[in-house]
Image 1 (cartoon, rainbow, N blue to C red):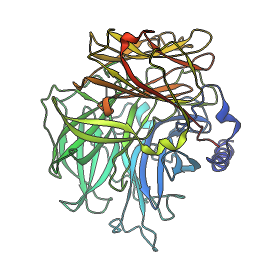
Image 2 (image 1 turned 180 degrees about the vertical axis):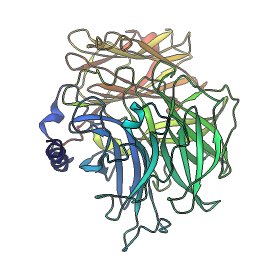
Image 3 (image 1 turned 30 degrees about the vertical axis):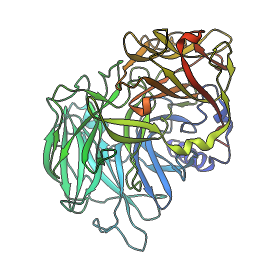
Length: 504
C-alpha cells in the first residue's frame, strides 16, 4: 500500500505545472506567488542549482502526511524563478536512512567519474538520517551520501558506496553544502556538526578530508546549528571580496524560534575566519518565518537565496489542511558597506515584476482604503518631516482581522504585528509583534512589501532589513490603508501593484 501511495503522489506531482492550476491551488490560505507543494508536508529547500536554463528546487518532503515524516527530496524546476513546474520525487529513503538536507552541484569536469555521455553530471550531496540508530540512542545515525543524474535532474542514481562521510560520533552531523574552490582546485563541503561548522575537501566528491572547523564559541547558539552555506561575494561598488557563511538555528532567533544568522569573513580553502567579534550577531531576516535558507549554485553571477517560510515553533500545527508550508520569495543578496560595517542586503528578484497587472498611487492624505487581493507595495516616508512616531500599512478584512507593518521612530524599529491577524490559536507564541532594528541612517525611509494570501515580506531601506511573517485570517484580507490617518506622517510616495497568480 505504501508503494502504491508513493507512486500515485509521483504521478500527481508530474501533472501539476505552472500552466495547469489544480483545484488545490485555490484553497484557503494557499499562497499564489510563493512556491508550495501540491500536497503534504514540505520544509527546508535543498539542492538548489541552475543548469541549462533551469532553476532546480529540491525540498524536504513527506508525501504521505501534512506533518514531518520520513524525508524525501521533492523536486520542481523554473525558467524564471517565478513560475514552477512540479517534477516527480527525486530521492527516496533507503536502508541507510531518510534523505535529509543537502546540495547539488554541476560536475563540469567529471571529477566524480559519473559522466557516461555528453551530459554533465548533476551530483547531489545529502544527509542520511537513520531513524533506527536515533531511537537506539547512538550518536552515529547521520552520515553523508551522494547521488547523480545524467539527464538534467530528471532521474537520480545513488552512489553504490554510500556513505561517503561516516559519522565521527556527533549527534547532529548534517546538511552538506558543496561548492568548487578554484584557488585550491578542490570541492569544499560546509556542514553543520553539533554547535559548529566543519569544512571538508575533496578532489572527486567521493573521498573527503576534514580541513577545519568554525563557530563553537561564535554567534548565536540558542539552538542546534543547521543548513550552512558558504560563498564569496564582491562588496558593492568595490573590487574587494568577502566570504559569507549562513547558519540557521532551530531556536534563539531575534523574535523567537527558528532563524538564520550570517558571518562575514575570509576563507582560505580550509577554514573560515570571522571578521567581526565573536559576540556579533547578524541576521538574514528578522521575521519569524524564514528558515533553513540557502543559495543556488551555478547561478551565473547572481547570488540567489530561498528560505522555508515557517518556524519550528508551530510549523506542524498551522491551519492548512492538504498541504503545509511555502517558500519565501527568491531573493538576490549582496554585500554592502554601511556605517556599522559590511552587511548583507536582501531584495526580491526582478523577475517578480512580470506578475504586476496594474498599479495605483496611494493618496498621501491617507483617508482611503484600497482594495487588493494579491499586492506589492512601495512606500517612501520623509523622516525629518514626519510629525508622528509610529506609522505604516494596515492590511485588513471586514472582520477587523488585521496585520500592521510599520516603523516606530522612538525605538528606531520596523515591526510586523500579527496579534489580531485571524486564526492565531494553534500556537501560544504565534500572536505577537515582531521587531527589527533600522540599520541605515538615511532621512528617507523606504518600505517594500509583498502581500500574499497568508504571508507578508518586508524589504526595508534597499534591503538592509528583511522581515517575513505568515498569518491566517479567517476571511481573506481584502483592503489596505496607511496609518495614522493624517498628513503629519509625511508620506512622500506610495505605489500599490496588483499581482497575478503564478499557478495558471
